[in-house]
Amino acid sequence: MSSIDPFDVSRRNARVAAWCAAGFVAMIGAAYASVPLYRAFCQLTGFDGTPRRAEQASATTLERSLVVRFDANVRELPWSFRAQQTSQTLRIGQTGLAYFTVTNNSDQPVTGHAVYNVTPQLAGAYFQKLECFCFSNQTIPAGKTIEFPVVYFVDPKFAEDFDTRGKSEVTLSYTFFPAQDAAPKAAQAPSALGGTLKAGL
Image (tube, rainbow, N blue to C red; front, top):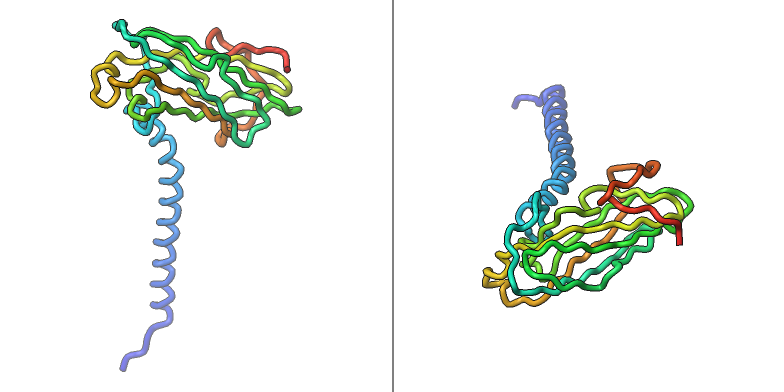
C-alpha cells in the first residue's frame, strides 16, 4: 500500500483554497456590479415601475388627460423631503414640470441619492424623464433647503397598451437614501434645472 505524500496533499489544499478565494472575490465583484447594471436595465426598459430617461420631449400630445400624483420619502437621512404639489393633471405626451423640496436638518453637508418608481408598475415603461435630481447624487449643505425640478412626460403609447390604456392616474414616488459611492462635498452652484438653493427652514 503506497503512502500519501504530505507535500502533495498540502499542494492540493492550497490549490482548492486559491480557487475558493477567487470564486469569492468574483461573487463580491458581481454583486457590486449588479446594482448599476440593474438600475440601467430598469431605466432602459421601465422594468419594475422604473421611469425611463428621455433625450427629448414627445412629438405627439393626445387629447386625453392623466393625473400624476407625487410621493416623497426619506430613509436614514437627516432630511425633510416633500413634493410641492400633490398631483398634476396633464395631457398624455405633454411635458410636465414638478418641484420637490429637500432640507438638510443636520449641521454638516450630507449626500443622498434618490431611488424612484412609478405605480402602477406597467406605467413605468411610458413615464419618461427629461430632467431629474435622481439622475445623480445630491449634496445638501448644512441647514439649507434646495428646490429641485422634475421635467417629465407620459409617452402616448401609454394610451395604446392594453394593460395601461384604462388607467386614469399614475404615481411617481421618490425615496432618498444615503449615497454609498460618494463622500459629502461642498455644494456647487446649482444649474438652471439642477436645484435652487434656499435658506434653511
